Image (cartoon, rainbow over all chains, first blue to last red; front, side, top):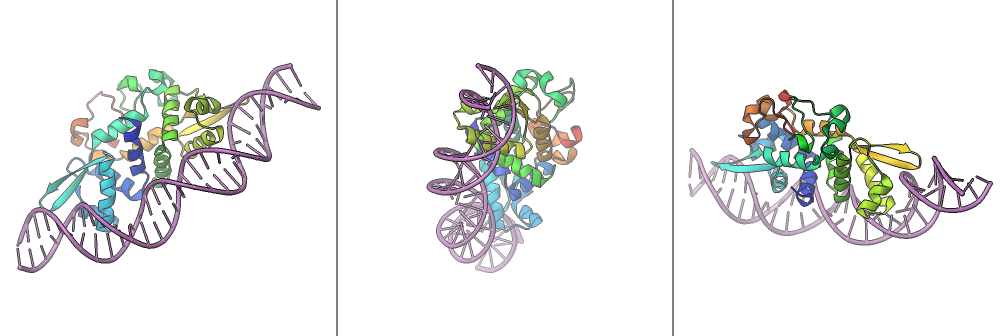
Length: 118
Length: 118
DNA sequence: TTTATATTTCTATAATTATCTAATAATGGA
DNA sequence: TCCATTATTAGATAATTATAGAAATATAAA
């Protein structure tokens, strides 16, 4: 992951419809949700929904697969993880004891960890 | 954390100078870095740097403190964590086994975890 | 072939944002 | 007190960019 990959990903997340959609897909799990279902659930016109899903896909945050005449979109957990890793790279110069109240405790599972911890 | 808080945070991260600055502060640790040092390090004019730091601060991603005539900026690890938590809320409907290759293993420390795991 | 679903293309509108210069504020030392 | 340093604010400009809608196209199922 490089800056040029991270910037479009964060840009994709800074739009309400897209943030809602990605969070919905994160909840949904690997099976994903059909484009039409998302369109209906959020009350967004299909072309607009498609546009936003494409943005998320281009940013590497979701993937799609065809199933019959539906296109299912699913969160790309690996892409999301790489983005967070990039943001937290070399956290506290690798000394997690410096992260203040967010120190990574042994055997805990924090949403992010210092690079040296992962 | 709500959508209205997350959106400006992601928007803040979608600008190159700000993303660079935040990653630099994440590396620096709680002590932070003076505004002038960041300005010089990245070759950005002081007013421009100040503008971007303010954006990051407004987004809750960094904090500042005065020390003599310097202003030190430091990563707000709590804010960053809350942002990631928000993005991953209720991941896979709380069943981490569904997260595909990024399953949260027992006793592992992943950069993010399903909500039910944290 | 007909229907349902999804995507693409195009366009108009609007909005935002990044950066520069100049001025101001605040601090600390001589 | 005066000066040098550091940082922020204000004002102005310019460029970019993104959003969303309409219409048309493609794909697949019944």
